[in-house]
Length: 294
Image 1: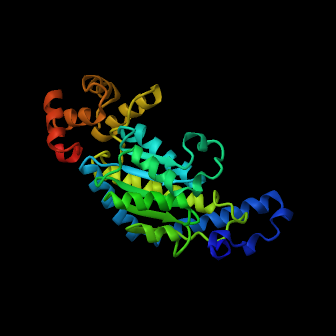
Image 2: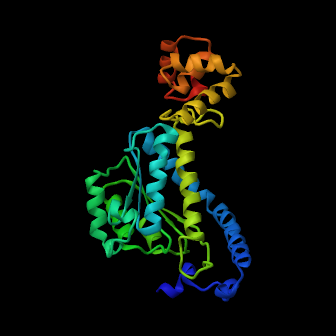
Image 3: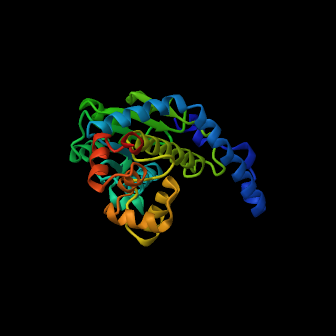
């Protein structure tokens, strides 16, 4: 079955990869990478539908849950982890599951991806329910762990989506929404951490970022719910206030402190010329959307 997958075929442009100069290797890799975004563009209509379902999940207190094995699983875990500091959300809002658990992040866990029941156990531990959206990720589109997870998620009424890098992927048959980004043969045959991995990372970026915008985590093009957990992020927060309101840095810093380190509240205080308590109330009524609070 593997020989029928585009991700497993040999790339005609790199049949002499081992005999190329370093510059030629890098040039052909770069050329192949440039095809990825074009292929993703074709899948935007279905990615849009998935984003809309994720937004609906968030609005009713549900979660976005990624499930995958190997590189695919690691990419899901990475995207989930980065949502916390970027958008100021709880680690429970976007969750990444990888076959074999945390140990699989740094080393292969033999047999884990071949188990459908392991995925069921992992999702049961999360108490997956009808409010959640579960996205199964597999470059090949045939990973048993992902299939088992999607089937279980469907059984409990969660929204399901499949992200693969081959057309007519097996996992697509186990999900309500199928995102099939066929990236074609890899520069290094079968090494799906290359183009396929890049495609998956880009699509996950699109889904999580667009969904967070959809629930008010962004004002203009600024990540106004960023957690100021270190000096760099605190400086960034104050700069956002300056850029969004036009005040000087001193005013931004003072208001940021008055707003208890919350960029959104500081923005509403300045732009609407109101007190901290009033800004908090407006944001609450606007469900966290700065533009609506104004």
